[in-house]
Length: 127
Image (cartoon, rainbow, N blue to C red; front, side, top):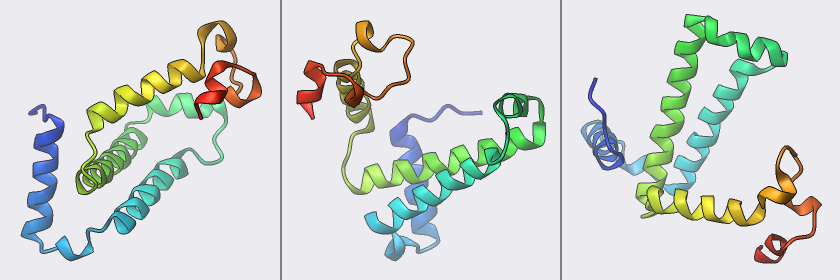
């Protein structure tokens, strides 16, 4: 199977939309809602499972295929929204990583699930 860079994936999405004349439905509002809906469908797969059951899902080929489909749907809408709003996902990703590194200094958060707002650091002033 062909590996597609982000630009090529966006091109595939636009071709799909153009060929089906779906352009009129492609607004940031509609796309962000579709993204949220698909993310919710991913969550639904794990709803009511215990922690152990959620790990065991890896051994269920039907569930894995369902998860793959939902992840692909989330990626589809994410790529489309970023394209409509002229957001470079590569830049956005690396900028967010830098922000998270500042918000969550290793010496304060290592091994902790606390949110950065639960301790007083320089990162608190960044927001």
